[in-house]
Image (cartoon, rainbow, N blue to C red):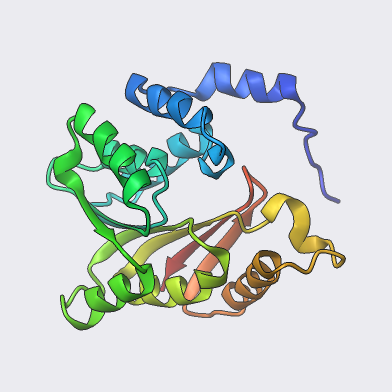
Length: 220
């Protein structure tokens, strides 16, 4: 028998009131992004806090992020890393990356950020083939274009050390992955990605019906 809590608005507010500890600089970034038309691309403060907890739990020092947007997840990561930690962040937009870096600088953690602008597939391939970074990352976060997820995943898995943790965002896609009438490119890509990870014996996995769906995968 499955027991599932009905997460009403009052329950969500209770969780926030008894769990959320959002640094002021993150709150300011969230509110700034909240005025943008693309604001739905930003992760929630609860998800940002969950990521900081995961980073600390695995003792992450070197992390990878594919898809930065205005930087809420990037800043969350940088704040959680130790002083000598580095997050290699991939995005295609100079405009959004500037917002992210500005807030990282205000928080005093810009020195932990290695921002790479361009096609993330090329960036990740360079890390593997030219920079010898395979097996050197502790954590990876995927939150970029959905048709690219399978390729990002393969590169990230190569870059992660054994025991490293990968988190993929939006894997439930507002529930569209279970609606066969929805056949757009993003939804079909996420269905394929979810099936791929489920069948992949290189990782231990758990899919969480949290936020817009998160898959956690630990490299064997």
